[in-house]
Image (cartoon, rainbow, N blue to C red; front, top):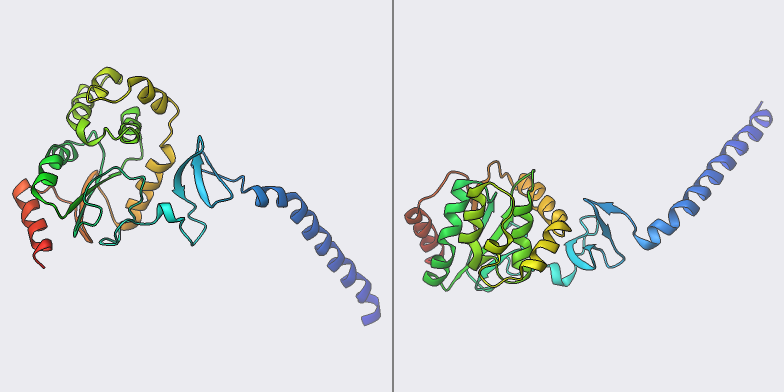
Length: 240
């Protein structure tokens, strides 16, 4: 009986080995070149997602985050990279992270306080994170302006354009010194779509549920804060 079934067992094993061999042969070029797609962008051999040769995000499938993507100053559980729009002291004791949607009224209010808060606190770092599942051209424009180091001094113009709820006014958005041509090119390319998507899903993982959530280091504030409440919160962290 055993002698009869041995050929069949060997035949099955040979089939498994052959199939495995063909799968490896087929997948090897893709594995070698890391030509996978994630959120519309390629993951390259340096373990980073790129868009137009610009590093956008660390490959979430790789446990080692590239050096230039590592969190600047680990004051918070929120991942902060060199690519996030930031304002302030990189060695700050307090990280104020806005998880917001530029079309949200409370988020707009927070942004109007940004520059004054930085002037008031030398130990403060402001970080912008997108929290929207319907990214618009204006969402893209935030990062395109930041690419030119013009986001934080263009917040009032951005809010004005958001409230107008019309086609993007590139002249208005670039009035703080940005190149309107470069801005429009960047927006049309959707250069930061992967980063916007990543921030949204990362926000969900952190428990963010609305479009105007603040993190003060590790403390999350979902309900809108007044300026007085926010400054008291920052003061409390600094005084520890």
